[in-house]
Length: 468
Image (cartoon, rainbow, N blue to C red):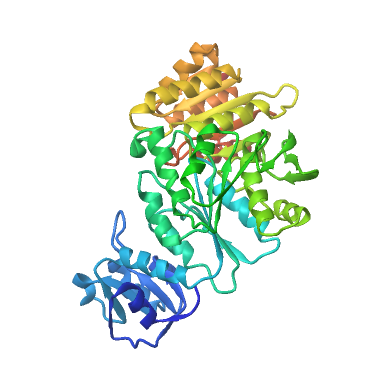
């Protein structure tokens, strides 16, 4: 954050200063008292298990120059404070005011899947020529987005911000804070159906980003999907379409995939992106489209791609002991699950090696939970994988779909207990196998990765006798 005075914070929020001069300079923000440094504003926000007001004194002792607090808790804080009706609302007001002071190009990225990858690819590519920031981790909601905006400083030339939502109206609220000039929708799929209610609700909600863009800005949409293509009518600015089909503004040719890179040609230039899976093509083309719009050369774009690194938990191909593992544990939706299974089926396998899918439940699907897990199982069965191991309350639906699609029952596991799944996986795994591990965040499928590491290191001893 650029240095600013307490008076600026009052101007942005309408709050009341106590025991601090308006001229005092502030240089950062914190919501965790343990991470406070000198010059920080500590925002006393309510949490799921506790309240930030309980840690205001600790924040001040760690160097915070100001605490933003509610009036009913103000007298319990012996130090410089800004009193507001609600600290979270004040944070949003402040970040909106701060955004108006910045000249950086703000790119807003939303979609049902692929937001984080698109944001990371964009940041890697644009950073090859320009100074900028991206949302840290998945800071994409009513709290994370304001904090991401406050990372932009005057010397930055761009900011790539992720916008997440699970209900209609949330993207609109976020765009009123961020005021993006470039909008990206990565894909429309069946995610957060419990909140959006239907795919039509998802389309309405995600399209709020397009409606927020100024006439002087532009949007980038997947052009091969008729759903996203039809959403272009909601934008009052130019819309660029990307894909490998005809009638796209940026069209890919000669697309090839290996276990180390995605390669494609645009306008006779060959790009190589260090990601695994063809489903990353749209996000790579989005990065190409935006980079070209702001004047980057193909060589500069490729240099940016070369510096991109996939994050653990997001379609990250790694090696654990004698196995190759697709670590896609961060989250899951029907669209993302389908893409991950397709990737598993297409990766080359060593002679004698096999392909196993270890799948946790997809959450937040509401009334569509059973049908979506059944369809997931059908897809897995049609791919003729060597084994599908499903864990969770909807696991039986996955197994039912896979069985009806022709996968032998002897290659299926459905259990609500991860321990049972791991016991069977322990029996099945052999050197040179490939394992996909994927599920919604709440399923904590990274536990499977921990187990694989333990097995690889021999910590768990020999396989159970029943496997002999």
